Image (cartoon, rainbow, N blue to C red):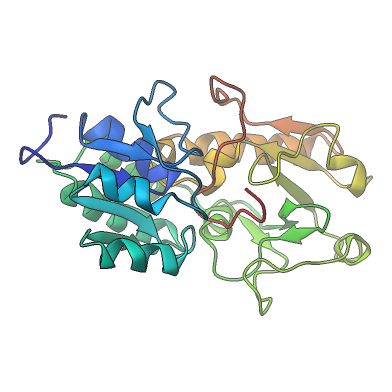
Length: 275
């Protein structure tokens, strides 16, 4: 898709939004965080982390717009950018329908003339999901040392719920609670979902803590990013979750290409405890 009004210069502080803008409005993105790993060939000025962006560097780039997320980025940084005279668009995404609305808003603000086909395909993919045959309970660790899991009101939790997987901690007071491992085991979930971000769980790092419980290692981009990956997320995640449950304690990884540099990609729908 070609860009809209000439001169729209954008800095993105959210990895999934960086991908969405780069593939939809070529040339609009001039800066992105160190965690913005998609598209693999993204060649823009790097402006630090999502939690510690180099505000002075962003100001020197003189963007027309900075796109951010209310959870991913910190308010003092966004306030500093506004005080420097830069417009900041802040997204809030805690459910799949909100992702589609916010993506359309962001892309429009970045100069997209029309709605991209990938966004229509993603929305259609989620709209045609069949009702699950049965519901499954799961815990979803996002960190260890200390153990942290998905809690209430999260985008990733909504993604799983729409696939028939109910987060055991969906009604916890915190959105990302710290829960001791013995308590996680005592919750007796049907399944443990282990994404590779923000903590990079692997076949050798994570499943051994939940002996006897099926574990599904999934690409965190499928679970937490709202962008072009939303189109393939329901099919690939469903297959991985189903295979893990059918294979007892097997570990199943969703077949999605990793970042070309093998680095940990930043998440767009949950905090990174460390950067």
